[in-house]
Structures are given as structure tokens and as C-alpha cells.
Image 1 (cartoon, one colour):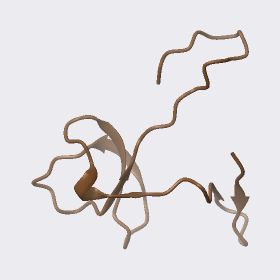
Image 2 (spheres, helix red, strand yellow):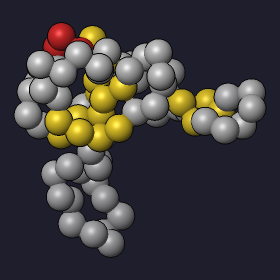
Image 3 (cartoon, one colour):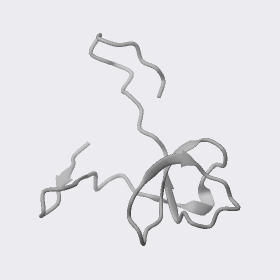
Length: 75
């Protein structure tokens, strides 16, 4: 998974991983949430009655093959 560093050298981004529209977000489970205008993401649970969030993303997982130092937790 390639990543880039922005010109200010303050952010690493994956240009192949995108925010999803909030209308597709599952309610009540842990996800990444963001308001596009404010630009700061948080981990939390989406509640449809809250209208602050504009986009969401699922959490990353560890690859099945790990380095043998820790068990795969499935998250």
C-alpha cells in the first residue's frame, strides 16, 4: 500500500484509500469519522441523528500473516 508525504511533510496519506459518504456508515460500531470542512478525524460510533459528520472509513486490520510476535486480534 503506497503512501505519500504532503509538501509540508506533516501528513502521510494513502491515495488509494478514500473516505466514504456518511449515508453508508453503519450505526453503533467503531469507525473513523470526519467532518470534511474541519478536517480532523476521530474514532467513534456514528449515530444517525448526529448531523456533524460528513464521511466515515472502516478501521484497518492486520494482515493474516504477522511477524510471529503477536497474535492476530482480527482488528
